[in-house]
Image (cartoon, rainbow, N blue to C red; front, side, top):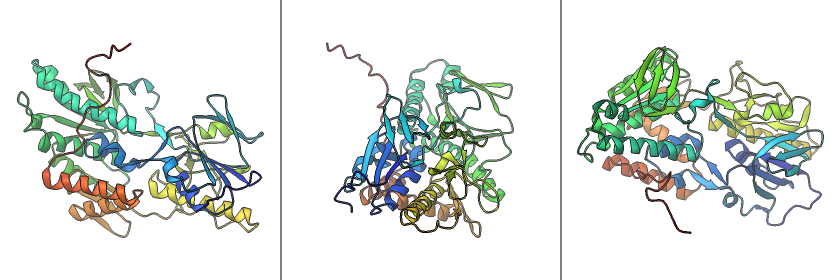
Amino acid sequence: MAKIPPPPEAHHLVVVGAGFAGLQLVRDLQGAGLRITLIDQRNHHLFQPLLYQVATTILATSEIAWPIRRLFRERADVTTLLGQVSGVDPQAKRVLLDDGGTVAYDTLVLATGARHSYFGRDDWEGVAPGLKTLEDATTIRRRLLLAFEQAERETDPIARQALLTFAVIGAGPTGVELAGIIAELAQKILWREFRNIDTREARVLLIEAGARVLAAFPESLSDYAQGALEKLGVKVLFGRPVSDIRADGVTIGTEFVGCRTVVWAAGVAASPAAAWLGIAADRAGRANVDANLNAPGRPEIFVIGDTAAVATSDGKPVPGIAPAAKQQGAHVAKVIRARLAGKPAPAPFRYRHQGNLATIGKSAAVADFGWLRLRGAIAWWIWGIAHIFFLIGARSRVAVAWSWFWTFISGQHSARLITQGRSRVPDRTP
C-alpha cells in the first residue's frame, strides 16, 4: 500500500464516480506512481444489485454501502472529494464543480453512472420513485410500510384497496425482484401482524410494455420467472404501457387502477457526460467511445461503466451490470499503466460475459451462463453466493449472509423500520 504520497509533479488522474467501474480502476492503479483524485456526489460506494433488498426491508443500508474514504484510507496516493460535477472543460483540462470549484487533470476518467429515465415524463418521479440510491431505497421502503399502516386505519373499502395495491413498472431484473419480494412481504410475512386488514389480499402488479418478463434472458427462463411470480400472487400485465401516473393510481393503456404505491423500474438514462465532452451518444445518452474506452479525439479522457456505449464482439451493447463495469475499470487501468511506462496499449476492450442472474422471492431464481441455464433453488443459491462474493469486506459478507439466513429460517425481514420523512410531532426546540 502507498504510505508516502506521490510528489506534486506526478501524473494527476481524476476519476469522477465511485461506482463499480471507478472503484475497480482506482484499486488496479495502486502503486502506479499516480496522484489520484476520486470525486463523487455521495460519500459512499453502493452495491446497487442488492438495493432492492433495502427497499423491501430485508437488508439495512449499512450492509450494502461503505464510506469511500474508509476504502482508501491506506492509500496516500488517493484523495477523495465530495462534490457534484457540473461539466468538463477539455481544452483547459479541468473538471467543473457545481459550487464553482475546479479540479485540474492530466488524465480524466468519467464513471458517472446512470439515472432514472421516465421517457419524457419526469413529472412522474415524485409519485413513482426509481431505485438507484440509498435515498430511493429508503423512500420506497417507507412508502411500502406506510401503505399497510394506513390501510389498517382506513374504513373506506375502495381507498383501502388502493392502499393495498402496489404497482411495479418494468419487468427487467429490478422489477421482477421488487415485485417478488413485495408479494412475499404481503403474503407470508406481515399477515399475522395486522388486525383490521389481511395483507394477503394485497395486489401486486408488474406492468411491462413488452411481451415478457426478463426480456434479456432466454424465453424458457422468462416463462419460469413469470410462473414463479404468479405463484407468489403477482399479476403480470403485458403489452400495455403506462400512460399516466398520479398520486392516486396509474393508467395502464386506457384503464385506470387505484394504487397508492408505484415503483419505477422501466428505464435508465446515462449521466450527461457525453454532453459535457461534446461527443456523440446513443439513445440512452451513453457516450460513444473507442476500442480503448477513450472519448473520440481525446486520448486523455476515458468514459466507462453505465456512462459509456460499448459493444460486445457480436455487436450488442455491453449490459449495464456490475461485472461489465468492473471489467472496463480494469481495462482502463491497464491502458494507463502502459502509457505511463511508454509501452504499447493493450488489446482493445473485450467484454467477457459472466452470466445473467435474477431472483424471484425465496428459493426461486434464474441464471443464464450461455452454455448453462438454471432455475429454481440451485439458481437461487448461485445468485446468493455470487452477490456475497462481490460485497466489500468480510464484515459485509457476514452481515448479509446472516440477514439472509435469519430471513430464511424465521420468515421475518429484519429492516422494517419507517425512518424517513418528518417526525409525527414537530420539533419546536428554538
